[in-house]
Length: 370
Image 1 (cartoon, helix red, strand yellow):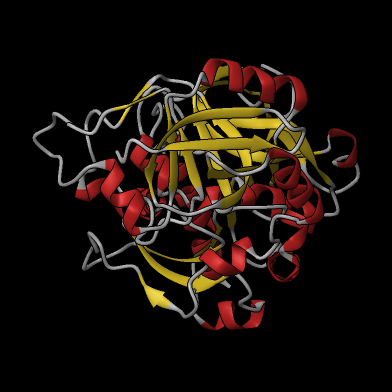
Image 2: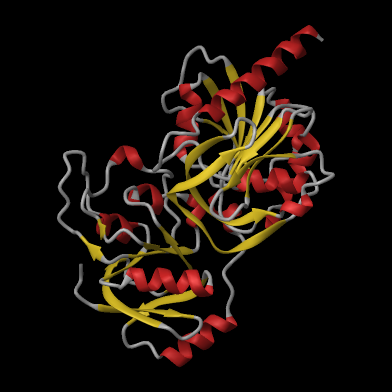
């Protein structure tokens, strides 16, 4: 670390000070917190954190460094990281470089030595907010005015989505059983790894790919990925799902879950401070079993808006009763708000990839009989 002081100025005028690490620049961010005890590399490389700064509630960050195989995207787009204790001398045989070095390379600003418990409680009380990570000498009044006069960009999905169609190659099976078209709204790499583990060939397409182009690729199923921002901003993907539903099996995760719900006519809303962490309890209403899940999202589906859409609620969050999963059996469409690929997180929900395989298998059999 540089040893220089740095400020975190919230839009309500609250100020936290600490020591700078990572990139040396000013960033306006949406400030959120994550309760995971491990997985900071997966967190900083998750495209869903685009334009956000994450306050890590677990105090020690950086102690196992950065490992080449653990990235969730090739080019991280998170804006910042706020921690209690930053370790710049990691101990891990898999470590390739320090967290500080990676943050410098990708323009991610860091602030260490912060009372992250106090900061997290502030976010819980007042909600996620805009903030400025800036120089120690920055005038607070002027910074607050700047935050009030400017908005977080709404182009997050278009920023992180692939710009062209490509075949996902890592771990590719020479004899895949299924062909999945993945609509990339900011897809985590471990989702593709999990599907390859299930013998799927994956064609990744941009978020704004129209339905007829996807059907030309002759998939057995379509996957809608996670991603950043407000789902109502991704009108192109909502339209595509609206035109695909009932014609092919569809599976959505996180933002993909919200997009599917919107495509069926449900509504979404922004949570006060979101769900971010690796220990969120979810009840599966189909079998009355409990799953401990990994989550990262700011928006949820309005419960009252699902009725009459053709969707059935399949999962609920036991902390606040928000919707965590929906399905339309007739259309072979289902989705979950949480992350069954679990990077980082528990493995309770990996069965969902098997459910997708089952839907594709039944659909393909019916199609061949036609």
